[in-house]
Each structure stands twice: as C-alpha cells, then as structure tokens.
Length: 114
Image 1 (cartoon, one colour):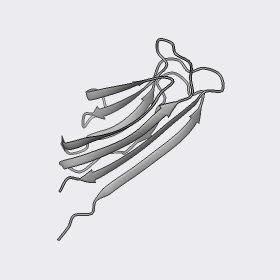
Image 2 (tube, helix red, strand yellow):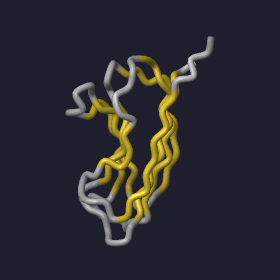
Image 3 (cartoon, one colour):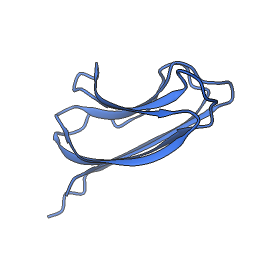
Image 4 (cartoon, one colour):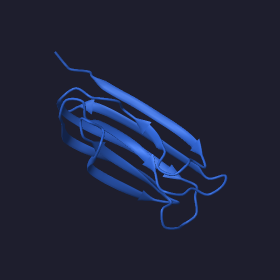
C-alpha cells in the first residue's frame, strides 16, 4: 500500500506586516517527508526584506531549520527525507519589513518520503 499523505498550503500577501506567517502546514504526523517549496517576493533589495522557510518544533516556539530567500527573488527547492517529529510543522514567514505594494508568495507541498 502506498501512503499518499500530503499537505499543500499557499498564500499571496501584499506588503505583509513584520514577521507575518505567510503559509503554515499546521501540526504534522511523525514521519519522513519530502518538502517542496516555491516562494518569492517582488520587494526591493534591503536588509529584512526576505522570506524564511522554517521547520518548527512541536510547540511551534522555535525553528529547527531555517532557509532564507532574500528579496526580490523567487526560488524553488525540495528538502528530501526530512525527519519530522509529532506536531512539528513547516511554514513560510516574511522578514521584518516589506515595501508598500510588494507581493510575497509561498507555496509548500509536504509528502511522505518513499
């Protein structure tokens, strides 16, 4: 039997407030996952204008891993065979500042590894 468990979340935000959670898988079941991310922004280049892709702990109180996508830039990547404990999550969060009219997008797909 093939385990077809997957989660798909996405968002598009215009000029998000500082540290806005842009997309969040919610608490995941324990297991090994492949995580596909497409994210980017139309912002200008400046300190704090970025998107963080975060692997959060079960209490959702700290990052276990963080990948930073500087603005303005779009990136797609896959984390393969990531071990996730019960109730951990994957989310995308804006940086500390966003320009007026800038657009931030995040799309996250989480699938059990085969």
